[in-house]
Image 1 (tube, helix red, strand yellow):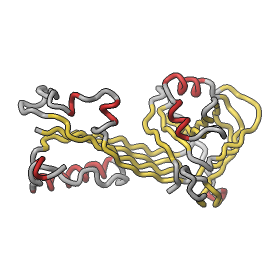
Image 2 (tube, one colour):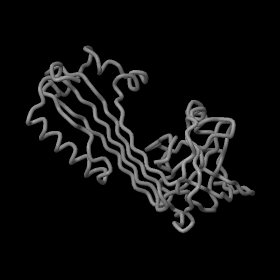
Image 3 (cartoon, helix red, strand yellow):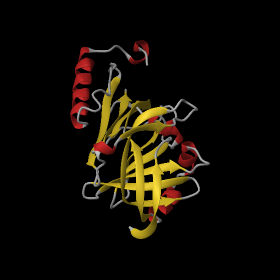
Image 4 (tube, helix red, strand yellow):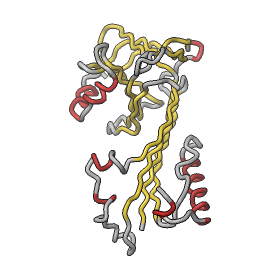
Amino acid sequence: MHDAEWGERTNDGWNAVKQINNWVSDKTGKKIPEIVTSIYSREKVFLINVTYFKGIWKSKFKKSDTKEESFYPEGNLHEQKVSMMKQSSRLLYSEDIHGRYLRLFYGNGAFNMILILPQDDKTVDDVIASLNVESWKNAMQTMATYEVNLSLPRFKSECEYEMQESILPTMGMRIPFSPNADFNGISDVFLFISRVVHKTFVEVNEEGTESASVSFGVQDSMSPSSGTIDYIVNKPFTFAICENSTGVILFMGKIGVIR
């Protein structure tokens, strides 16, 4: 985005940048301190949406059990030495031809994390490509309780990306970004969405999980089972944080490298 196209940056714009970022930082526990870096004179409306989650494991990992072990990143990168958390407990587990699913509960059980580890002959991208409403529903409904020896690395992840070029249009949202956009319900001036930015943060450790996401759009003029399972997360995996009663996914991510 260039000044010649969108107008000059203004003092009012700089003040708005500060106000927006302060609000986002406050709502995300300072995990996302900045979402907007500049505002141009032709940008009239910012729509900000924030999700913040902090959960304590129902069954915490003991820090004294955390050991340095190997993690094998994607892309044939050299193995990493990571802080591998460990616990043995009865957990819900299921699997299909693509992945192995494990459910970890937070607090009183209202929220949970689903870990998805690829089968030995699959990659994490194979798992992601296979996920749909039917496969997810089947994996959740077929979970049974097992004694699980779990090894899970501590990790922290942050990412930021724009969604207006391909992500949202691919999902069917095209008109709001075009000259055919119609926002007459909120303004008498012609408006269209020029950019949508999504930014996320997640941290998982022995205590639990802290995660946040923020996005903005800019308009311009258990059943018991027997047996023990070893679930060792030492290669790329996928995770989702869900609300338990509805199954709604709050966060979902892929971890290819531990940071």
